[in-house]
Length: 232
Image (cartoon, rainbow, N blue to C red; front, side, top):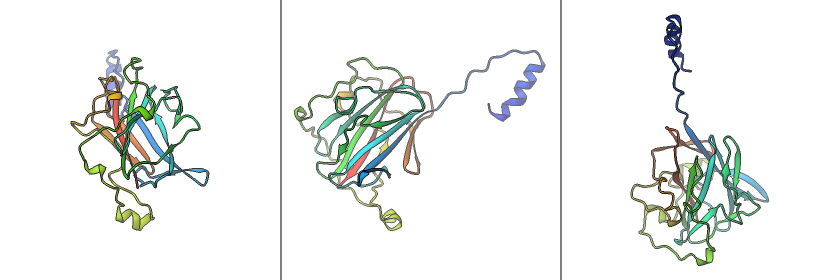
């Protein structure tokens, strides 16, 4: 309860007024981290790190609300593939409030491959269960044709931020990491069934190597945003 409300409530009680205060809206938050396998040890890395070909990565995910999670990738070659849920990465996509999850949820890992550029990984989180056909199941990746798309700045080869490189020695691309959907951007067809998953005004906050995605109003339906993973 906010301190400046205390005198008002005390006065109402003194006058014999009984009033039920509506609960304050709860901000919905999601946290994403990226880990890279280094010498058989998973290490937390900067979400904007430029990865090397054949690097093995996985994601950490945590939300302050219960719901369901779907992850779809558009590779640098234009191929679209559902990463989660699926047989290899885990079929149970239910999330509980305050619990940490690893994506993939199995022993499978994601390996960096394809032309240099930015993988666009779409994250769809929903506080309510979607219809069975809202998000299409992942087909065999070999049957997915490349999808042509107009060139965008993020299709270019990632570039290191010189200031960060000089300070830490890490190649970090400032255009990589989580961000909102660009206005007018067409979502992958596999997400088209989730009609309520339209772009929202989201806040993207960096907390050390963790990115916080927050909605200033409680989510009543699905929300989608993207994570651009840069690699050579």
